[in-house]
Image: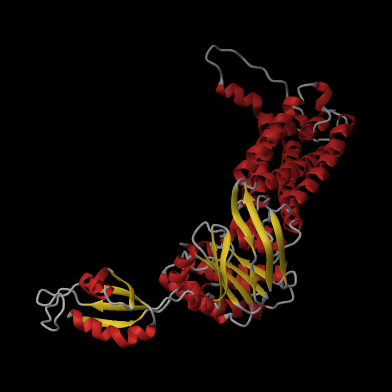
Length: 308
Length: 250
């Protein structure tokens, strides 16, 4: 749906984008992840035609008028009602549309009851949903969302993410966020942008699996006197540091590090080793084990590994 | 709902039409009244040293002179402010994005804003001039209708120039305050240039004075150069505004 080739945007000596080859598959929800200042908004603006690239090419397989853009903090003339904003968006992009469609998207975005109120009195979350309603009313084939949920409270964020998820299959969505959990939750393809460069792009599963390192997470109850086992820490209670030190000496453990609240992160040579040997090794430490299990690879960890 | 209705609602709901109408109609009421009763006003105020100020008996053109001298400055200021508020549509970038990503070319966004801003200013000016004309007739005496109508027409051309100037400046400045300030600088600079007699008859700002001058015996011959320059400049400014509106950030 969207292809860019060697896209660059420079502001003087600063490269906001540097050789970006973006590929957004048709029908996907593509998450553009990256920290603040990574170049996400610049990239979206160029795709939307709001900024000119310094060099490179952009190709979009969508008819003119079927691309909708939602900025991170949508604003509208405060003296318009919510319904008028959506009706205006419809008249500009889908003039053949009818009032029923306006009502439908207002209902879909949970604004039906507030539709007759002037949007100057809307909360931030309501404005975001109004922006989505104005975006959806024309049934666009490509939707560009810039940080659609990052400024919202938890409830507002949940509502917006649910709305985006509901759009799966109806349109191609390019969605930027610095909140990796949001990207992981709703996107099926991801691009990681850092300092203007696209470090990775592809299916989310590929990113997570490809970056997966065999790790186990163990949580021990610190300070508990167990009287069990023959190893370290009995009597006075085994700490996470004690456990990490003991496990580090095992040949099948690559590293073991103690964290907060009794957590120990153990990197192993293979998951099979951990499954066979870790319970016994923990028992030998005398630690009081609260939980034990393989680490679920998060986008955050994959992102940190990519960008570090 | 469309872009034309949007501009109509902007005028109505933000009460901008009230500001425009109030200025012109108020000065339309006050101007002839002041001209008619200036002698009485001065005698009531008096002076500490007993000086007696004698004012010639008012003539009908004085009513329009008073109206124009008051309305042309403050009225133009209000027109610039109201027009800048509508024409600088990128002043709040998110609102600009809403329109720019839905309307192409961007000049389509400008057309209703230009037209409605001008019509609102023109309506207020005509209403003020009408009130001043009626009150002059009622209090002082009749004016030559042809010269009044010609003066109003030239005043409207000046307002079209003001709105076009504001539109062009707004596309460069992209901020309301910056647009107002820059437009006013241009409009204030013109009368200063006009201190040179050879130049003044070519300046659009001279048209603002036609409604005061023509009923008092001025001739259209004095205004043809300024009229020609104003029409050409207005067309050029609108063309520039359309071109600049379509620019993307480099």
